[in-house]
Image (tube, rainbow, N blue to C red; front, top):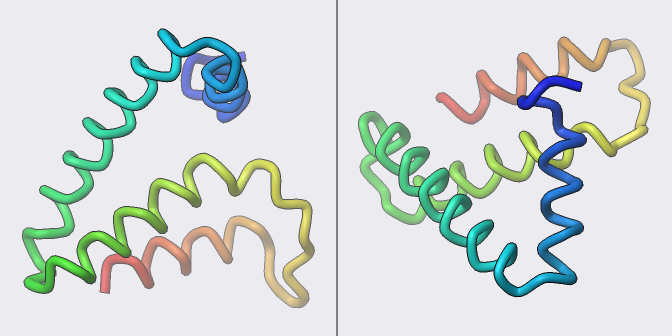
Length: 90
Protein backbone atom coordinates (compact mmCIF):
# COMPACT_ATOMS: atom_id res chain seq x y z
CA UNK A 1 0.00 0.00 0.00
CA UNK A 2 1.55 3.32 -1.02
CA UNK A 3 1.55 6.41 1.21
CA UNK A 4 -0.85 8.03 -1.27
CA UNK A 5 -3.35 5.22 -0.95
CA UNK A 6 -6.84 6.30 0.08
CA UNK A 7 -6.73 3.42 2.55
CA UNK A 8 -4.02 5.21 4.55
CA UNK A 9 -6.11 8.38 4.67
CA UNK A 10 -9.20 6.46 5.73
CA UNK A 11 -7.26 4.58 8.42
CA UNK A 12 -5.89 7.81 9.88
CA UNK A 13 -9.39 9.33 9.87
CA UNK A 14 -10.74 6.30 11.69
CA UNK A 15 -7.91 6.53 14.22
CA UNK A 16 -8.68 10.24 14.73
CA UNK A 17 -12.22 9.34 15.79
CA UNK A 18 -10.75 7.55 18.83
CA UNK A 19 -7.70 9.66 19.65
CA UNK A 20 -7.99 13.42 20.26
CA UNK A 21 -4.27 14.04 19.62
CA UNK A 22 -4.56 12.37 16.21
CA UNK A 23 -7.79 14.30 15.57
CA UNK A 24 -6.02 17.59 16.22
CA UNK A 25 -3.15 16.71 13.90
CA UNK A 26 -5.60 15.60 11.22
CA UNK A 27 -7.50 18.89 11.58
CA UNK A 28 -4.25 20.81 11.04
CA UNK A 29 -3.37 18.72 7.98
CA UNK A 30 -6.86 19.06 6.53
CA UNK A 31 -6.77 22.83 7.09
CA UNK A 32 -3.43 23.04 5.28
CA UNK A 33 -4.84 20.98 2.41
CA UNK A 34 -7.91 23.20 2.20
CA UNK A 35 -5.75 26.36 2.31
CA UNK A 36 -3.68 24.98 -0.56
CA UNK A 37 -6.79 24.17 -2.59
CA UNK A 38 -8.18 27.65 -1.89
CA UNK A 39 -4.99 29.21 -3.22
CA UNK A 40 -5.26 27.16 -6.41
CA UNK A 41 -8.95 27.74 -7.10
CA UNK A 42 -8.68 31.44 -6.24
CA UNK A 43 -6.33 31.91 -9.21
CA UNK A 44 -9.26 31.58 -11.62
CA UNK A 45 -12.39 31.71 -9.50
CA UNK A 46 -13.15 35.18 -8.11
CA UNK A 47 -16.11 34.19 -5.92
CA UNK A 48 -14.96 33.08 -2.43
CA UNK A 49 -18.12 31.00 -1.97
CA UNK A 50 -17.47 29.12 -5.21
CA UNK A 51 -13.84 28.61 -4.18
CA UNK A 52 -14.95 27.07 -0.89
CA UNK A 53 -17.45 24.74 -2.58
CA UNK A 54 -14.89 23.62 -5.16
CA UNK A 55 -12.37 22.96 -2.38
CA UNK A 56 -14.85 20.93 -0.36
CA UNK A 57 -15.91 18.88 -3.39
CA UNK A 58 -12.32 18.28 -4.47
CA UNK A 59 -11.27 17.19 -1.00
CA UNK A 60 -14.35 15.01 -0.56
CA UNK A 61 -13.85 13.30 -3.91
CA UNK A 62 -10.18 12.66 -3.13
CA UNK A 63 -11.02 10.99 0.17
CA UNK A 64 -14.39 9.42 -0.55
CA UNK A 65 -14.36 8.29 -4.17
CA UNK A 66 -12.51 5.14 -3.17
CA UNK A 67 -15.42 3.87 -1.07
CA UNK A 68 -18.17 4.59 -3.61
CA UNK A 69 -19.19 1.35 -5.31
CA UNK A 70 -21.75 2.82 -7.71
CA UNK A 71 -21.78 1.98 -11.40
CA UNK A 72 -21.68 4.71 -14.02
CA UNK A 73 -23.90 3.45 -16.86
CA UNK A 74 -22.16 3.93 -20.18
CA UNK A 75 -19.07 5.41 -18.51
CA UNK A 76 -15.99 4.09 -16.80
CA UNK A 77 -14.97 5.25 -13.34
CA UNK A 78 -11.91 6.86 -14.94
CA UNK A 79 -14.13 8.81 -17.36
CA UNK A 80 -16.33 10.06 -14.53
CA UNK A 81 -13.33 11.10 -12.44
CA UNK A 82 -11.80 12.90 -15.42
CA UNK A 83 -15.06 14.77 -16.04
CA UNK A 84 -15.31 15.58 -12.34
CA UNK A 85 -11.89 17.23 -12.47
CA UNK A 86 -12.81 19.12 -15.61
CA UNK A 87 -16.06 20.33 -14.04
CA UNK A 88 -14.29 21.55 -10.91
CA UNK A 89 -11.79 23.50 -13.02
CA UNK A 90 -14.27 25.30 -15.23
